[in-house]
Length: 144
Image (tube, rainbow, N blue to C red; front, side, top):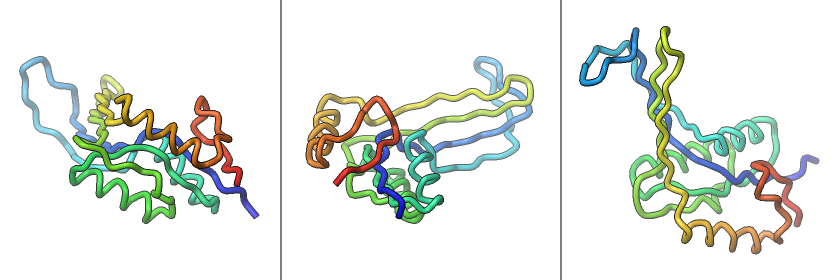
């Protein structure tokens, strides 16, 4: 039997717009493609562990916008328990990603998880779950 896991980390929607090159300052260019993907280092690890068959709970924040609902549903669809995914006031975390053959990849990331109020909530959950986690690690086994 696999031990349950809890992942503490970011939950983002990746907005990926590709073009042949990065535009100059003030320039508008025509892109080749645009896609959205569920992302965030924490969410990606939770989904990967769930795909390997582990029971996984995600601990993090999403905004109270349309992206937040999408992100939570995406985690649930992947088999991740979202009991401890908090919906907070404001925008969800997003990453604006622009891959380019010349420049590699540019990423502009915004996260809705840094306020002291949200940190206190995560600490309360940590205590509720038995205080058995090392918050310096992103992935920690759940001890019940």
